Image 1 (cartoon, rainbow, N blue to C red):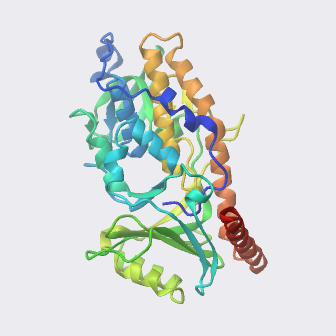
Image 2 (tube, rainbow, N blue to C red; image 1 turned 90 degrees about the horizontal axis):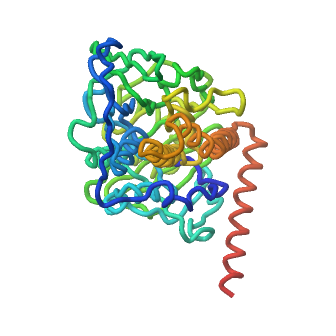
Length: 431
């Protein structure tokens, strides 16, 4: 779920979605013949394309490759799809990708389109309200349950594509460019292409030389309130700003409402999973805030409440490792973890998946570019956007999480003035 609306429009890459991913009604199979090098390398078997991680980026990449006729294997360390978590926001760039891989219509039927935003102070005073289509008629924003998104993507893949209980333990590059993957159960895979989609704690990224993501100084409680008889809220994001503390809630469907509370804390502290403790801590943070938020927390099932530290890692030009190393490449949070302040983390992972899939398919189907060249082309096309959004999300978070009274006052005045300007301009337009 977005913690704040994106401030700047995305680059024109979105307009090129058809070029990224020409959807086909049938899957043209490509020849995946490989010389049997498994025995000489000590591997148990060979695979052409191995995707490490069965999250959003991994499954979307697998679906994109499948629709271009490329078979892949997805290694997921969990025993089943990781259906934990609550909700995430998808803006129009994310929906364009989902349409490109033919799952957009199926998902739209299940989730409400969000019309706009209302921003309030903790005392209930409104600072600003607006609708998304005021500035962009093509904008589309929906909060999507992570569980449903993963199941929908997985349903598009051939049987046995996802191999559960397959935890990656080590990576070793061979002299011929193949990669030997050692799994936790002792299995050894020889992969011609490896795509790392294993999230913020990516073993693939660590092997490529990336540093651990950095804690940004605040954490978030998240939850998904359930109203069996129908949730009572309008289709808007409701933000509440305090000092060093902010919250929001937004309808996901006719019965579910996503909420979050971001709070400053200098250290991570112990990992807490007991839902009773999490619920109590969340309610204490906003005990004097509007009752709607308190009620939402009470309406949240035990398995739909969590607390997580927020982290990011900037892909600095000339400093950070490149997104690919040989025939190993990164997608989504494994490459560019970002704070959720712009609501673009999942959207960027989806964009990564189709850009990479299209470039790899071209190279594998006899294009002029090598696999390594295709991965470098992917990095070049995606880098500027993900760097800009990661940095911007971090800076927006610093402003919104400030506990300095002067900074908070300036923030609120700016937001309020933007709201006044928007209402004035809207009136003039009608005349």
